[in-house]
Amino acid sequence: MKLYFLSLLLLLTLFNCKNDGNNAADNYAYFGGEIINPNSDYVVLSKSDVVIDSIKLDAKNRFLYKVNDLDAGLYTFYHGGEIQMVLLEPKDSIIFRLNTLEFDESLVFTGEGDKKNNYLINEFLENEIQEKKVFKFCQLKPHVYQNRIDSLKAFKLEKLNAFKTKYPTSELFNRIAKANIDFSYYSSKEVYPFVHFDENKEAILKSLPNNFYNYRSSIDYNDAFFKDHYHYSSFLRYTINNLALKDHLKHSTDNEVFKRSSLCYNMDKLKITDSLVKDGVVKNDLLQYFTINYLSKNKDVENNDVILNAFLSKSTDQKNNTLVKHYVASLNNLKEGASFPSVKLVDYNNNEVEINSLITTPTVVCFWSNTFYNHFKESHYKLNELKTKYPEVKFIVINIDNYGIEKPKHALKENRFKFKDEYQFKTPEASIEALAIQPMTKTIVVDKHQKIVYNNTNIFSINFEEQLLGAINRK
Image (cartoon, rainbow, N blue to C red; front, side, top):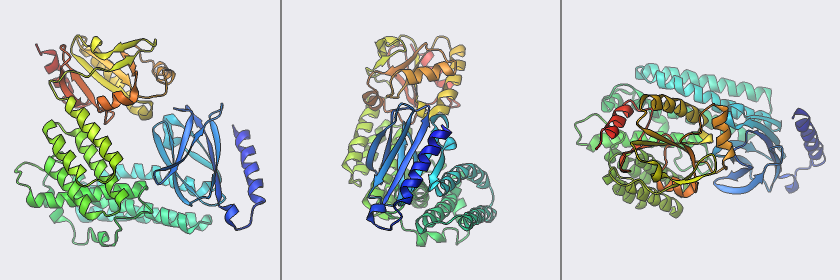
């Protein structure tokens, strides 16, 4: 592998040396890599939701692609359900290597342009670790909390300045790296009222220093440049959550503790999005995110059409609108008491079976994907525990991927999980839509008469076993 990359980098370096002129012909970049444990045989490269190309891996799971007429900036590469970004500028020759079992953690760049991208991916991973610290800090008093996150921001700026001193950087890189730090810091401010243990959110908002959200006046909520950027997108979501909270508390008549799952609060989020964000792409993505997020957790099916109509009145993206309408239709078909939908499965001996033919006792139906590998392992450990504890219950476990039978079969075998009651969908896309599988932790409990008892629970939930006993005791 090392010889391959050394040879490749040498060729790219020699090629670049012959084209040192500063002209349109130099407006290109090479992008390539090697993927260990690939989930599919291709990588999709895109920019701003526009697919540039679907690049096939060779027999050794490698690829090399030349981007002509380069629009310098952040590009997205997608493989088997995982997404990451790469910064491409003229005459870059960037090669990466990663293992899909630890997609982000294993990602390493080499070649011309590697330093800036390794900095960005390391910053991304460090930020994930720091987010856990920030959540703990959220239990502190507001002024103490602000001091802590101010210190985190200062440390990040120091690190960035040290990098810029050591390596030459472009204005584009500087802008992106600084935005990463800023938007991460702003997000820490926006999550504070929600993560703080005090359930009286109104009291928390009143306790904040007057200048706590001063930065909001300088924010561009329609930034086309950063609209695909992770930190910017997260910041917008957190901000709208927070602004909607303030509005919600003004008019809410609920005497109960604030609930993030309430229909009223989620309607407020759609209203804030519609009034605050004017850029069509940014607004439509946020509207879809908030709507799907509510629907995936909503227990009251009667509210599905209410939130759907509010979404459709504001969204102008017809593709998003169709997707959400189909999602709601599927959820409505999965009402508690309804018959479980007819879905065809395939076992690991390639035998086809209709799912309802398997349901003759109280049954738990749950799902997994190679993309969410940690969930795959943890859920199977939990299922093994539940199977021992409740032998009268059938557990049907379905891999939702569309990679063929060998990949999930290998994952099960490698982790010593039995094939019994393990299946794949015969038609993954149609079945995922029919069962409205979002999030991946979704679990459906069915009684012996093939009637849905719980349409959206979770095997890790503290009251899951209580729900299971309810299904067992049904007549």
